[in-house]
Amino acid sequence: MKIRTKLLSALLSVLLLLPAFPFTAGAVDTVDINVCVPDAAVASGQTFTAEVRFADPSQLGSRVVAGLQVEIGFDTGKLSTSKAAVVVDPSFAEECGSFSGKGVTAGGKVIFVAIRDGFSASTGFSSSLTGIFSVTFTAKTDVANVYDLFSASAISAVLGDSSAVEVDGTIKAVKAAAGSLADLATGSLGYTANASIGGKAVGDVLTGVGNDTTLSALKSQFGTNPSQEIKVKTAGGEYLSSSDVVKTGMTVELYENGSLVESAVVIVKGDGDCSGACDVFDAVIVLSWIVDPEKNPLSPAALLALDADGSNGNDVFDAVAILTFIVKGSWS
Ligand SMILES: [Ca+2]
Ligand SMILES: [Ca+2]
Picture 1 (cartoon, rainbow, N blue to C red):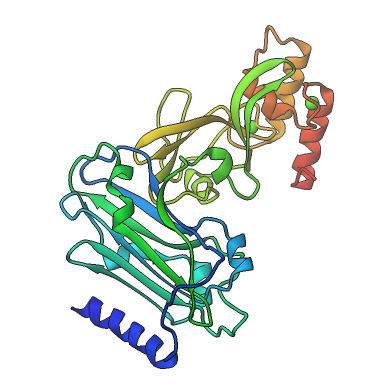
Picture 2: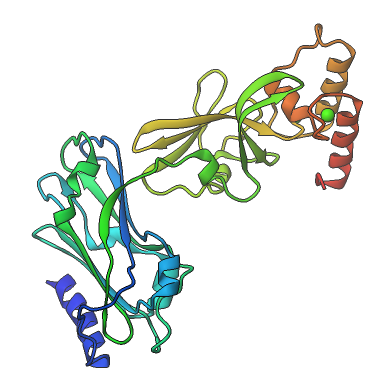
């Protein structure tokens, strides 16, 4: 009851402020909304997230959108969710101010309403927006593919402009692209497929991992959503705990709803002895390898990490670059 009361009061405040805001048909331009749902099996008790987004934010630029109402029906026999699991996108929330409301009904419907705060006849939601809100569902039973639970007839949206004219558009469930390490890596992190060093294949690599980076610090550098998880394992197959340091040659793995999606070899620049940091011993081992690579072998991942000057090969200049890094404290 409390949820409904709050939603109602939000709606009421909107109605009081905007007595002339009925949605009526007639506009020509369209604004489409996607409900991005994982195309994956989810086991009983597991969670997954549906992201509600503008399909093409540039549509907002050509069309003033001042208010919207989105409803997503779900099968209460197979899924559960709550008002707390409906999370408004921060950028979108900023543009709404206090003019948004959300609720989950006992009958199995997520309802979201929002109006642009402080709009004028020419100012609706800005075209830099993508996300609107997300809903995290918990499976009550094993579901072969959660995407199949979001039928077109159960989701709806109505959008209006600041002249109280309904904006044409569509809302549909789309299969969320499984995330990739390349998409999710942020900041200094980089992903390179099929990397090699001096003609030796290393495989897919994650670069830009700094000295003494713990697993929890690394995780914070990925823009994962609640259905995704980053894990790192050693060459021996042991998974790191949060405070363990990520080192050259370890494997970073991306899981989506519990399934392994992608993996890559970790490269900590300059860390050729796989200690997790670049120090003087790394300069020593690259010189040892140069002098006698058969007696002092190094893995392709180590050689890539030791290519400190980025020449796609290993020579004395890598040792010089490593020593320079140590005294300067940065690679640039
Ligand atoms: Ca090292
Ligand atoms: Ca080099």
